[in-house]
Length: 292
Ligand SMILES: [Fe+2]
Ligand SMILES: [Fe+2]
Image (cartoon, rainbow, N blue to C red; front, top):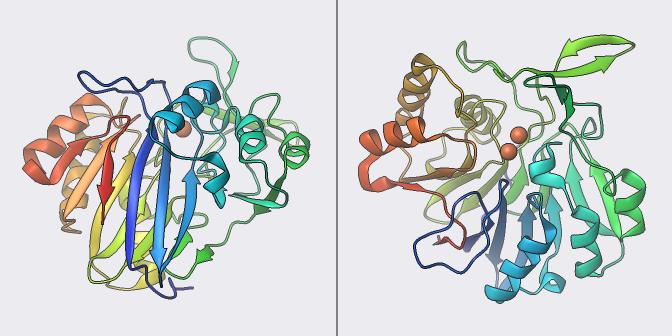
């Protein structure tokens, strides 16, 4: 499957993120939520990628940013983790629509837990179950496949794991038929936009599939298109030095015009990205706006 069509322009607003800039009045939280405003043929569609974990802070930021929840047309959940999905039903209530598209992987409601430092469930929380989402007006589109949201904008679907250095290195587990298995986060999906005369823009949640895997996967869907920009979390906060260096090297090969990474990317990786990409790199922060 390919990205069919192109967007005329794309605005990305960081509605929620872990950091807040000097003198900013936005509310920070551990989590991420990015609003994509996709322009095509005189029309604009708004897609929210993740809802972070504190819907009150998210909604307050939206008021400050003059984003009306009712103007949102669809939500993509990049994976199950609570810092991307918590409060979804409340946000859907504010959006106030019926049959509102919520796109995610079919495994998103599974048991997903860690035991470090103690047994703890980290997946979709109480209050945001399938039933809660539907009762709040959401219509779930659960698929492993790439899914077109509009011409020029799609989800990646399940990402093939092809690199030898991007294993999911968190101690995450699930239970399958009574057996505890390590959870490889197959539900980790990203969003790809194709913007006219610019190229592909890649939007990740945590990038648990590995950011280089994600880029290669998008290339396999779309061919040798220019990768224009990459924004989101790369989940390298606990990664080894070797993995960080290999990842940054892997990103370099795609020659992106810009990278904006934060949330779970980790300070050491941000430093390495800055040293490599200089002005083409920016750390994410709440309220950042990128116009493409
Ligand atoms: Fe996260
Ligand atoms: Fe995550």
